[in-house]
Image (tube, rainbow, N blue to C red):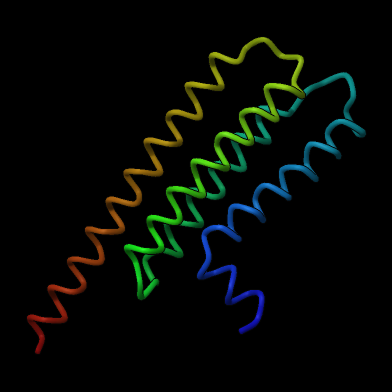
Length: 131
């Protein structure tokens, strides 16, 4: 199995990839734009990237329940690590606004997972009705 197929099937690797992309973005932001801070935007963007890509890839998983459980755990770990890292790195004191954005993305992610379950149930129902 190649790395690309493994990333598609493993939410843990997806979260790790998003985390390392965020680390690279933090580094570029700190070295390229020292007067401005994009740390919170990078963290929120990483969470949104994971939420969207993970939910879309979840539709196609054969073991959906296992994938979803690992996805939620991976999202929680990614959320906590990005929040803690950004809170430590960023000089911006507008943390309350970004907390609300992170909460909104979390609710959005859970709703997308619910829609994924609904789509899978509809597809399964239509396939059974076809037989």
